[in-house]
Length: 378
Image (cartoon, rainbow, N blue to C red; front, side, top):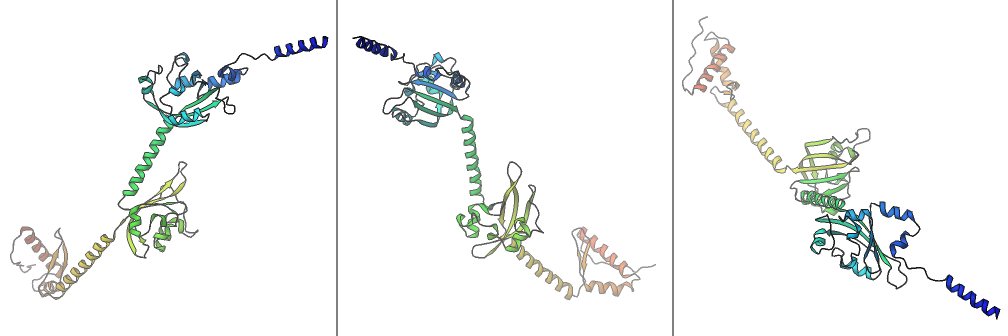
């Protein structure tokens, strides 16, 4: 009997000892007995939000309130996570399946104002990096709540967009550059070529990228101009100020043809000033070279004609420059000076000078008349 009473009393005490504690919400559970967590929550530069099992906002740290332009937590407490128009539908679906979601997306404060979700001092659109984690998930049971971490990545997004735009702009220049453009690294391997280079040389871009730049130059010119290929005792260290301006080199095409080019090249450096490669633009000067050769041949023929005139015409010829200086006289004129100098009592130089001056006077005045030279009375 005593035993029964004792046993019954013992069971009563056991039941009293196992009486469940009052249920705490998610925030209380996370804060419980840990001031360190509260300090992290308050001081974190990352926005942190806690939502209950129904997706209602329970708490948000100061960084989060500042990020969303909210003055006091009371203004947004109870905000419904799953009614947020800025939360993608795909993310909502995953959260309902107790899946953690992370996404980067624009956040439109104008939607918040239009739908009167809460008072905010912010306007326009920002870009956010959002991580939402269901917490307290046990097997297939619904989560006890949701932990949301938010970072404003607007500046990073702008920088990335600017970089993408800059790359697109640079790529557009390269692709539409009329002359050839080649970029090589510090080991003289081709990194970039534009379509004009491929068309001129007969290679595809894939055939050229990663190959030695010597592949497209005459060998002797590569060694002469590009430091990469010089013998160690003749090589010099590439410097950022090294450039090539209007330098004639010769490309070698895939089928072995040689094409004269006019080159301009500059050294590429990284942020630390280290040389990383060379960028070279070049213009095909085949037509210029052909024109120069045609001109050379024309001038050569003209000189031959002039020489024949001076050599075989029996009359005296005197050629003046545009400044009326004597450029040349033929042998017939020199013979006349020699023949009449003594008869007119002049030296040959004196008579030649008199003739020159008389010719200049008539050329300058446009007068056409014989030149009469009196005998020297001295």
